[in-house]
Image 1 (tube, rainbow, N blue to C red):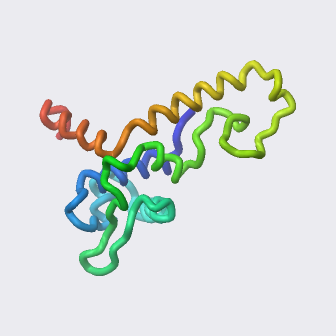
Image 2 (image 1 turned 180 degrees about the vertical axis):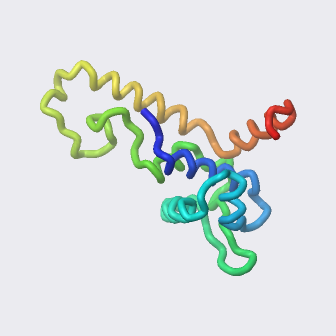
Image 3 (image 1 turned 45 degrees about the horizontal axis):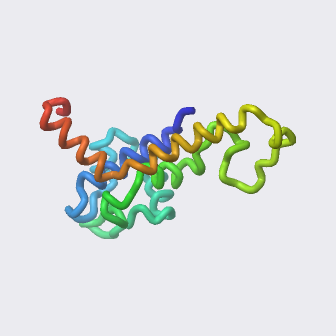
Length: 146
């Protein structure tokens, strides 16, 4: 299972906002430049993140984007689901009501897909933007990030 660029780049953008949390609105251009993302593509991602109530926008010459909550209150799972939808290795284990399968009662693979889905969700819901920022600080202290 592989995330699309929406999920990967959206997480990078949110990480950039978390790195700058408390510094006021961050212009889209700065986010795009610092995370090496096309500004045009980033506009589309930010729009989705805004609809998901993860970012706020501020208009004007000193405008830009900010997180709606502290980085410690935003999980990687929230971000990825806002951009990608439910995470599941197979349609039969999506969190929707319309995933009936004729083999559901006796399918040997469905429990495998459920375990994979649940494991992924457990991991992405356990990591916050604050955790990512702290990891970045550790990398810098170790000289692993330039």
